[in-house]
Image (tube, rainbow, N blue to C red; front, side, top):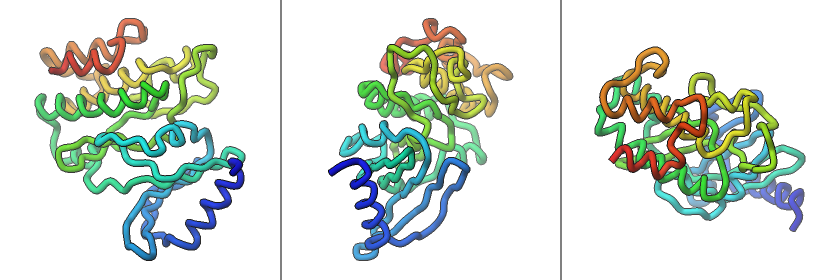
Length: 238
């Protein structure tokens, strides 16, 4: 079955077997809806967005407790449809509105995000949009979501073809200074850690102690001066 045929088939399945339950997010690039299977009542996340959906297709049937299951992913002329697991829990952004994280909580959550990123990076995928809104706490598990800005690293390319990411969390190379790679996500993790600990960007207030030194290395402007991979970062947090 061709790409266009898969997209058409998935669109038909959505109309016939699912109903919209709640619109969660809408932007010029697309929407995120909570949908419900008519027969079983089970809930799923439906993403529709314009762009490159290659990372979602790479994640089909991939199982990791720190990543959502991707059940279906199809693209036609740059328009993407994705059905993924509904993760029940609170976003890190929501939780940080009530209180900052302790150093122990920060280490635990970021080590789990390193597990998720290790899976992505092993596929040559870069998330490129790590921020509190894209982390859901499900029980004891931190789950990294939203791969709409993710891309596959292409060694032959000098810079990203499209500038995506969130201001403050995006690494310098995401603004046309070079091609994003796995160290781009390490930069964003460093900013995330600092926000969890202090509520601020490290350029305004750096966390104290050993974690502050880890964050400082993560957020170096030169990617070569950051941790070489997320496993090195996870070890530094142990």
